[in-house]
Image 1 (cartoon, rainbow, N blue to C red):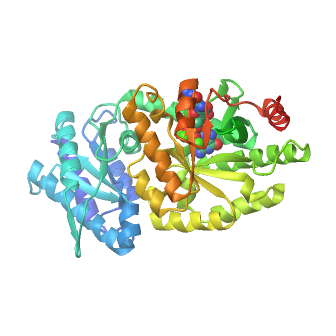
Image 2: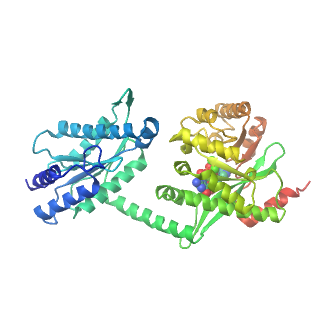
Image 3: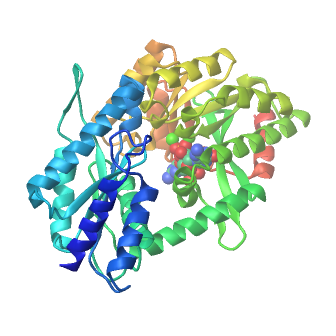
Length: 460
Ligand code: C2E
Ligand code: CA
Ligand code: CA
C-alpha cells in the first residue's frame, strides 16, 4: 500500500541518518521529522493523499520531575517514555518491518507518533487512549517509582492535510486543547478547534497591542474591617478597554494572557498603574497610614527569577512603601516548585510586602501550604460564603478557617459578601475583613478617590 510505503520510506531515511546529539532518547527532532515526511510525500503521493496520521504526546510533569530528581533523571525518564511508547505501539499494532507507526522525540517534553493509513481514525483514538493509560504506569527511576502525566493530541487521517506542516499544526492544536483540559486528556483534532485557535491568536495579538498602547485600567474594590465597618484597603482588578469590544473583564482575557506568557507583563503593568494611583492619593492626602492596595500575581512570576527586585524597583520609582502593597497569590503559584516559591516569598516578606493566599480552600492542599509558606493573610473564597447563612456545616467550616488563621497569627478576608446575613455571621465569627458587593463593587479611579475621601471624613 502506498501509505505504508511513505512510512517505511520515512523510517528508512531516518534510520540512515546519524543520531542527533540533542535528542538524548535517540529519537529525531521536529525539524528533521518534518523534512522527512515532506520529502517522502513529495516523492510518493499527490497532494490529495490521505495516508498519514499524527499523535503528539506531551509529558506534562517533566518540569516537576526535573525539579525534584534533577535534569539527568528527568531525561532518563524521557528515554523510558520513548521506549514504552514504542513497546506499546508494537504490542498494539504488531512488530516487524511493516510496523505502521514511527515514534519520534520532539524537544524536551514531547513525542510524535506517525501512523500510516492502516491505522484509521477510530484505531488512532483507541491507540491514543492506550498510550495515555500505559504512559501513566510507574517508571523505575533509580530507587524511586515515578509516574508520568501525558496529554495526547491526535490529527486523524483525512484529506484536510495537504502537507506535513499542516498535519503537525492540526495535531498541535489538538494537543494544546488536551493540555488545557489537563493531565491524561486525549483530544482528536476538529475543524472548530482551528477557529477557536484563530480567535485565541487574534486576542493574543490584541493583548500585545493593548499592553503597548496602555489600554488597561484598574477597578478598585473596597476591603473593610468588620469590627467598625471601616475602609482598610482596595483590591485592584484589571479591566481592558478594548477599542472595538468595549470593556473586557479578566475572565475574557486572563487565560489567553497566561497561555501567551503575557501575564507577567500584564501584572507588572497593573502594579505600575496601581502605584501611580496610590501616589496620586497620597499626594492629595486621601490616604491614611495602614491602608493598602492588593494586587493579583500570576503563578508564572515564580517560574522566572527577579520578581522581588522588579517589584522593589517599581515601589522605589513611585515612592510607595512596600507595606502599602499587598500581593495575592493562588495555590498554583507554589504548586510547581515549593522550594523556589518559598525562597522568593520569604524575600518578599523580608522587604515588607504582605502576602495573601487567594481563593483559600479551593486548592488541593491549602492547609499544608499555609503552614509551609510565609503568608500574612488568607482570602476565604466566595464559594464558602454562598450557602453560609442557611447551612450550619458551611458556617462551621468558615469558623474553623478563622480560628485556624487566628492560631497561626494571620488575618482573614472573606470574599464575595453580598448580604447583611452573611455580614452578621462573619462578624459573629470574628472574621477581621470582608470584601464584596455589599460593601462596594469595584470602581474606577475617580470614584475610588471619592470613596477614600468619605472614609477619611466619616459621617457620624
Ligand atoms: P479574585 O482575585 O478572586 O477577585 C475577586 C473577583 O470577584 C472580582 O472579579 C470581583 O469583581 C468579584 N467579586 C467581588 N465581590 C463580589 C461579590 O460580592 N459577588 C460576586 N458575584 N463577585 C464579586 P473580577 O474583577 O472579574 O476578577 C476575576 C479574577 O481575575 C480575580 O479573582 C483575579 O483572580 C483575576 N484578576 C483580576 N485582575 C488581575 C490582574 O491584574 N492580574 C491577575 N493575575 N489576575 C487578575
Ligand atoms: Ca484576588
Ligand atoms: Ca479570590
